[in-house]
Image 1 (tube, rainbow, N blue to C red):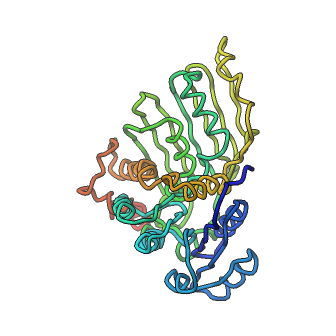
Image 2: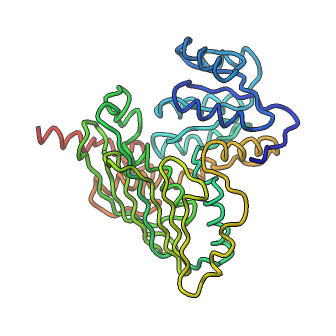
Image 3: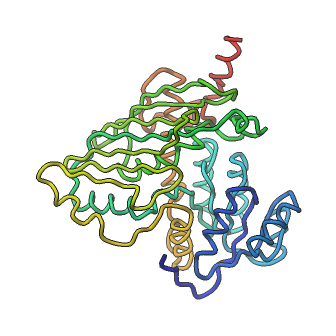
Length: 370
């Protein structure tokens, strides 16, 4: 991996030292000119263990305490979803750059507040949607922009994962006001973010969701049909009740079919390109260039580079809004039984401030069937 040139070190604090924080620490240490300056956690012992493992300079119980101990440039927010929004606001109020794990917020209302806060801050926000940064995705975009693939036509985007009941029995999981939703928000969002990154703006969605197999307040599966502004049509399935786990995307263009099958991350070997008869030119350049795996290292390379250059952070809150808006629309469509257009969920909609429209539909269904 090419290292990002730096003239001075970017001092990073990691907030929350649970499982995903290790992926951030590992990715950050692969970048040139980065110092892991602080590990922040309300659990002092866990923070210290994390700091020892990754060579972090100091520990603290809060961002303010960490700043009192020395300067910081970037904050990586690796806490449970409900705290992403307030911690990002705090970082921006202090003029710091921040990286937010998925989902970046729990609602479209919070996303709008983050946009406003970023506009008033010297800092910037970047949302973790790491599948955008693998070389395969970037190659698809290059071929599209060169016109070699032709128009997008029909697509499939499946996140079929398996989480047992014990996974949902963790106190903060499966709750609307903590996680913001089920697999549509917390699992499949990476894959359909990649779909939107490749195929552009969506126009409308019709969806179904339900609680089919797990005791949880949210859905455990959803299915949607999405029409894009280009006219292309795609199906999206998000599940955590599928024993054979896979993440699968198929994109049928006029001149080629592009397929991606992986689980939690991909390299070039996970992609397959099948040209239409007589259109082998559409894929002649596919195997050229560096193989960069999707993942936190690839996105952090872009983030650290943007800080060094003073350029906009990759995957801004505005960029991520379209993905979050599609998640909200999948919920709104499944609960209301109607087709939802992009832009329809505004500040007058109950789905603007909470993904379930404050209706807790599957919890009510469970109570009715009890």
